[in-house]
Amino acid sequence: MVRHRKHHFSLIIVLFIGQWLMGQVCDYASMEKLLNEAKSLNLQDYPNPEDLQSVTNDLDTMLITCAEKEFPGKESLKYQYHENLVDLCKKLGDIVGQMRHLNRLKDHSISDEKSSNIIDERIAFIEQDYGPLRIRFEGTTLKEMATLKTTEGAQHVSINILPPANAWDMDEITDEERKERRERLKFIQKKSLEGDLEVFFDSYDPVERYFYFEIPYVPYLEGNISEDWYAITFDERKRYRTNFPRPTLKKPPKPLIIKPEEGWFLETSTPETWVKLSFPNLKKQRLKFKDRLTGTLSESEYIEIENKEKNSVDYYLPSDRNIDIIFSERESFWQNFNKIISGGLCVFLFIYVGVT
Image (cartoon, rainbow, N blue to C red; front, top):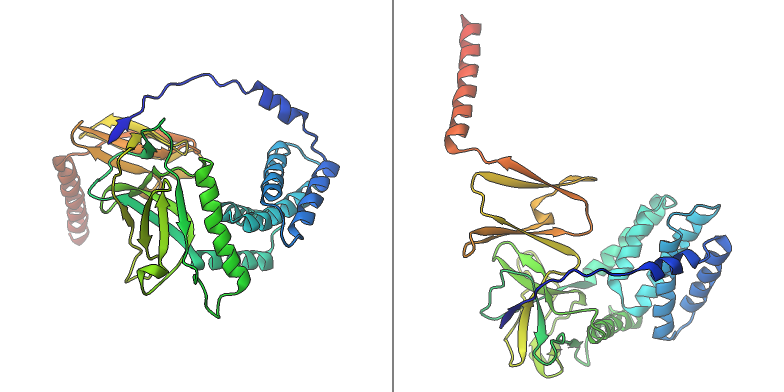
């Protein structure tokens, strides 16, 4: 079921993109004009989703285009851009984008303590009502990142999440909150059908040692019977029922376990967000990874997997960081033992001389 994809590096010509970006006008007037369009769209009760996505893309592009340019009033406009992008993403159901712009608002130089507290509250509400839904294969322990595809033209497998008709039908949940949760599920389906959300097993469980697929920010849903659970459909043909209650310390979320289907296969590949490095199992050496900006990477920031069959170790590192690889000699037992003895002897001599 697992196929390996050979990576071919090709030259990508992006000259026309650079020319297009250079041709974009970046000044106060052009930024303000686009900002007014976003404000007008955010005031609409039932905006066209295509218009929402188009203006969102335009705002993001303008921020990139104007990143290196300076002019009076730019920082204030940038702050307002992120404010409107938060609202646009909220209407779209794009919670990943919403969280990204909330954090940029919080880190902005204009942000004060009051606005920072308001942003923290919004982030806390999102994290309270939404969480990652984990999906893994039954009886298959993936040791490498892989994408689930179909044998028909190697197409990606689409995914759709349908809530029950009475989902979130409680007095404490407002109509607006209920609408936001349904819009989130529509957004997930849309991105899956467009190929922007592939069933990519690129998250790793270090305790049970397997890769799994994770859908971010799925609304929590708890039902007493299976009819009140989510109906999750893969490739518009295979349906699973799953409950997705808000987790607690005593009851962590359970993954949805799916079975391999005829016409499916796993293609081992690494997404753009990761870089895979493989080294021989160097028993006398130890690897460290150091970010040039933030320092040494913690074990939670990269993935390390020992491949006993190939007598090697695979490392997955985040691709958006400048990382140096440091080789250090792994000290033997006798080297450590000698250090302990030498250190203890020095302390003993110091005490002995002092007493004498």
